[in-house]
Image 1 (cartoon, helix red, strand yellow):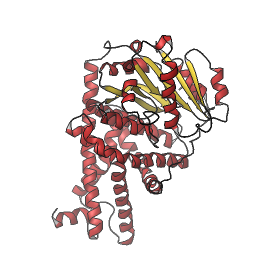
Image 2 (image 1 turned 180 degrees about the horizontal axis):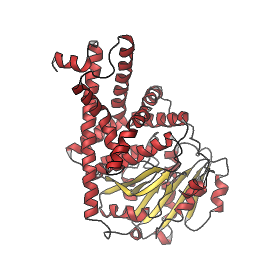
Image 3 (image 1 turned 90 degrees about the vertical axis):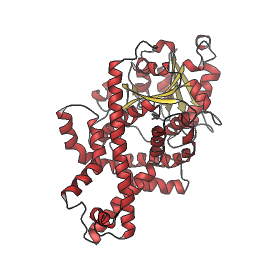
Image 4 (image 1 turned 135 degrees about the vertical axis):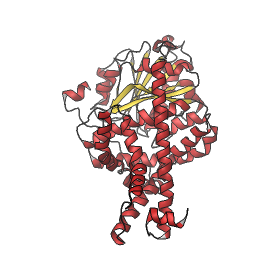
Length: 443
């Protein structure tokens, strides 16, 4: 890049800072191009879905739906979650609740819900409380060795058994099986993720989490569905049993990772399976109204993202187009990209204070470039939540507060990297928020 152009873009910053800023500029431009591309793909996918609705290819009755509910001290929400699963419109259904060594009343609550469709797997020490992946793997083994050997389930082949993960605070839409079933008409589809929403939206933090999850589903996941590279998000993911069998390691398909869902989704793609997103079905879950608890959660997720860097070596095995594989690489590199961007932000603030350099460009062209690249991706993501002039006005109004919310990832990244390098991988469970109102109960 010519020196005059770098000086115009970066003013008179030291050369080492200028290199950092140039790298981040390239990242920002690539992020902008990526979001625009994915947004266009997602819009085309929505139009194609409306023109040719896939209903009629298969029905939910063609499958056995197995809902696994990991539960460790979940007395606050477990009855609500399992009770809603008992109302799901599934002809063939198994609900497998995993009481992972709870020392509250979780076990008693599950006993009161006893019925033919509900199975409770009770884990005890020393096996209990060894991680979510271990609990689900135990349930995976129990499903095959005990449940599927029963006469009424024997005729379901592994291709026709769909395993869904529903967290103990999850509220799966009653029509989710029918909305998800058509994806599995494609024999190469190994996993489907439904749209995640937040039901306890009572403040800025939970509002922002709801925007984040819904926009991620409507833009990034919807677009990647066209490539077959939509990833699994844990709560509300559905996987074909035969696909899970292809990635078994040790005790089962799930590995001991802080983001075991992300790890599983990527490994399914690397094993040749397709991943898709279904935004017509939702799962509502609790958001965090506490900034401290939110930062703690995001630190754990970020540490899981650092662990997932090891999956980069298998990207060549993904059966998808070159752009799709590049997107998978970009996705896995997210923590490094975010860290570089955060360091550039800190450097900008330090230079503004110490050297009295401007925080934003002084020319009109520079300002246009700054706002387009800096806020364009967030604005596009916000637009994905609706259409029309009202949605544009809404996106303009909330882009700044939503951007500030997104910056919460920076301190989480620093802390998570330190924990990752020190190999500190144990985390205490996030406590649930009590169901405080009729609105919560009905959501």
